[in-house]
Length: 121
Length: 121
Image 1 (cartoon, chains in turn orange, red):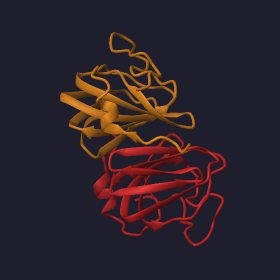
Image 2 (image 1 turned 90 degrees about the vertical axis):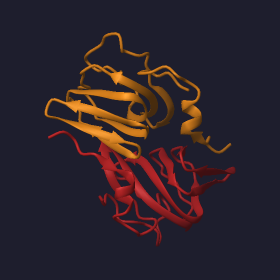
Image 3 (image 1 turned 120 degrees about the vertical axis):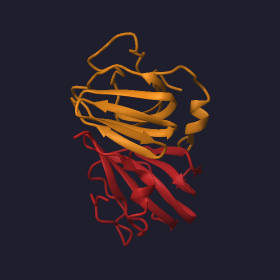
Image 4 (image 1 turned 45 degrees about the vertical axis):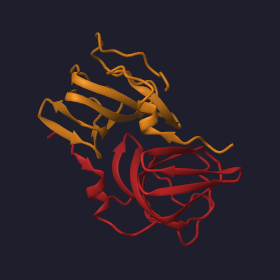
């Protein structure tokens, strides 16, 4: 059997929980995740890896200690390894995240926003 | 300075050559590439890595020895490591490709479609 077609919007329709990434694909040991973001997240960093955010629908900001990046649909940004950042949105924003398998959403910060990892949809 | 915003459509507007991927971002040692595809490509495989195709605009097929996958805008597919495949389109299709740095577009096949690697836009 050839590999599956993965439809991003169909996958988003399967979950409504926010700040809880869902894995939709793997490229070797990297994962492609979808997440619904709304409101402010927590400041955190990932000591061992870069992290890509691509906006699928809506808009978001990623705050850094030295400035803010604004992203809208069709735009992406790579948060460098070890750099503190804080995603935030005014309304719900649908994003695609790409990073190595095993990365926890809140990085070094922990707390209530920490989602179960490696959950597929 | 915070990291750059990368706009997928703006990046596509900067090149018109087909079958010649352009790097727009890196996540650690993985690259995010954009490519314009039109017509048939060559059968090939990548012995050491999976390869993700996401359609940004238009539609494409990826032929496998055991079937054909059809992808349209907002859909993606991961070609498994070592599996022969042949991308093809009827009209120009804009795709995003994610794979480790160093992967050559024609894999083991070589030939006229082999593009210079690691070209950024």
